Image (cartoon, rainbow, N blue to C red; front, side, top):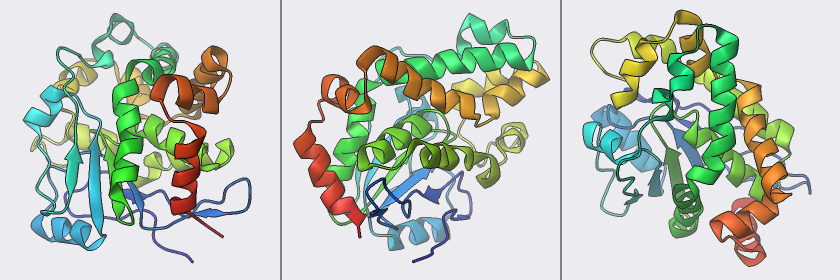
Length: 263
């Protein structure tokens, strides 16, 4: 079965299906059950109707509290549960001094690698929530999203696909698809604020040098591999990470695979 992976929704950002991938044991992730996205705030009324037609049952919003306040999600229907978490005083890692001091693309990429190494060990509650959203969706669809649909969403989706048994090379390819699915630089420059919900992150990104901006807005293979490497170094395996950091045991993994994989 071949379906369109990137869904060009009016007012959308990086909205795409991450089903259809083959697993190591020869099964396939079901299409039209798993979706990833950037900000949903600016979806037009027709686009909201298109999303509704996908049978969405849960939305996992990985953004910080302040981001959600600035760019709230639109209502997607009475049967759709929207999961979000209070992040208290958490600020964007892009505000870290390592980014402000980055004068070259290599320095900014190094800062991005460090950020990706930290995400799985700083966002456990929300990453665990992505799996909860999958479970709550039942036979319906689930959207996992943040602002750009690249960094936090990229890590969450990578963990989901790894849990389902998708090989790392395929996971990396899905992550890199952001570079074709959306022009984040153009959306950052858009003075109307439509498209991307950078929220408080826009100012520090715009303050970076041009090369550093390019590194921050890029979906780079080094970044997502840094997440896998950090998990392997600290936990030994994805399975150990899921168990020890996200409280996802073998039984939950088996249930997810049974529901989301087909032969």
